[in-house]
Image (cartoon, rainbow, N blue to C red; front, side, top):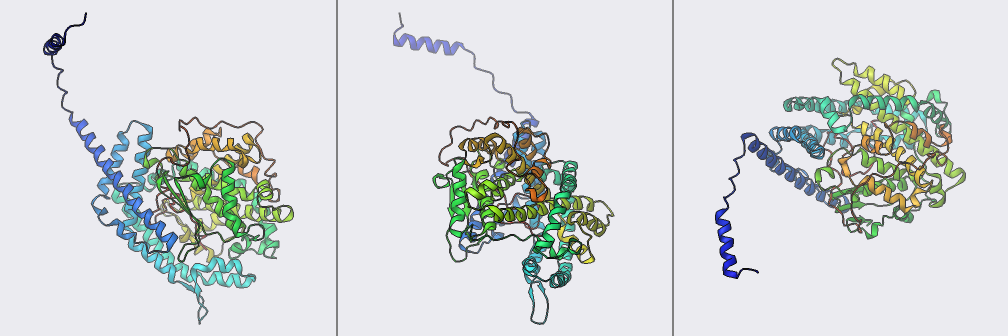
Length: 592
């Protein structure tokens, strides 16, 4: 029988009164209180950094798409109160104390961002002086001056080898002036690192997310293993593009030697975006239906013609700006931007530090993978209608250019690492390494360019690793889904699993999940056209089904309304923080 309501209430009160109160929680120890205070401080720092980057991204987007002035300097007002060496030290201490691997990685990303931002702000005057000098430097005299910045395009368009040499050597004087400022900024950066108590080698490893010895080993392997196909390409192109024997090729000839065909008839302006977006639809990614992706194709006054992918909040607000002009080069660049859209829009990580910050090698690898469809024989034939001799010529020239840029990046890694040694003969090192890269001896005019190729933190290592990882991804996709993997929705599902973690996964970790023990050159060599000394790309498949995508509990994939996307952090002005380019809008300068 149930007791009456009054009796039940009395029983409850009696029970409550007879039960002793739980003992009070002991006050936190001094260590626990200090840890809580440190966590709160770093959490506040992270929020401020996120807000700063978001404000900057909004300004960049408006400037890029509308030509509006972008006062990025104004966004730093008040940051001197929190962007300090003490704050950087707090993040470093909390990272050391963090137990969870993802916590440590997120804090490492935040730490690297704060360090490079602080360095940039404290070298801002020198960076501004470098930018102004680059804008005002000219070549020639007597009313024949031309902007120094146009040197590469001038060399590419000049048919006379003698005039190319004259142009190149005329640039030596402005290069020397520019090098003086660059050296001052580099020295200032090294001194500032000393104030932070951070060794340059330590920051290099943190930014590159790869041990230094592995960077050097990989760069050396690239130069060694690609020597034969590069020599073949150099010999052939010297005749077809320059009408010169290879023995007479100099660095002044490089822009013309590796210029790309336009092929405007096969890549009309009106088809550039449609073909790229249609390629993503083949793997089940419909940009038009993705609520987290904004595509700006307007041809408006003041719009920057270069492609831009900007994640303002990763992955919920990803923006793509394009202004197609037509031609094979434009198609390739548009595909590259699509790779960045994939990486940012399909990231599923919850922490902004693991989506917007961190090393961007993996993001570049996915972008190179999609970009390289413009070299794929099936894609060229089925999508662009390009076949026969026209296709073969395009694939040869584009592959040769990519191989050269890869070798050049590898050379910069080796040169910059060696040049950091105390008492190093920088010009002698430059001549030796770059002579190996280019395949011919360097001249005094070449040696004068050494400072232009100096990198504080070996950013070129990201390019090397990213491009080689892209070759591994392509090989795995073709092995698992066939040579036309880009027409297979199953391939899209496989790709989504790898994209979900964002920057929480390093390039090495992604390679291991593919079943690759270490990133190397084999997959690249297998993908080279026969004209560059490799087997046909279509034939270079895995013999097995390839590894499955990693198990990622990402839940159902809606029509684009995923996590917040912010792209990648803008590299600090003048600080080669690496592939964390927020606006992936073109290639690094050649250093000519």
